[in-house]
Image 1 (cartoon, rainbow, N blue to C red):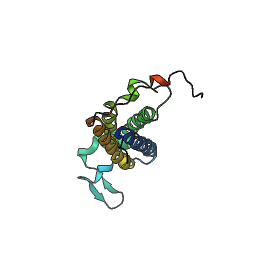
Image 2: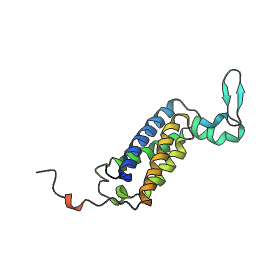
Image 3: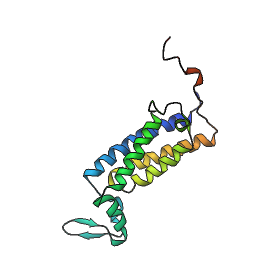
Image 4: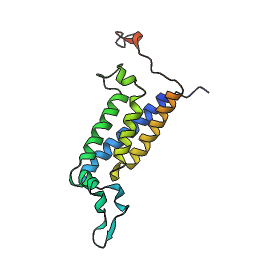
Length: 155
């Protein structure tokens, strides 16, 4: 059996997590719910849980105006563009950076944990970030593909 290449595994998990978070942020526009409203919230007979006054900023940023969903949509779209990679970003230092990716994934996970639809994407974003951190600890690097430049896929 061969060795596990951690940054490749993390890339695949990050693609799935970012795609899931992108889709969750899209649905978060239509079904707006602050996920942590049950902490300190009040149960109303008609209406279910209502968030406490201490969570008013989150209710404003998620329910009244979907700011968190919009930022999460942009971050997850950026992560898909880096990990897939977008032709504009292919073979750039931004695409090869193993330090930027876990930072962006943890920020994506933090934002996705705030709204209801993003909790699963947040979990997988944290797993992908942990795998990227493991790749950094093992000293893995993504080599620049200079030898492939200009070949254009011809045999």
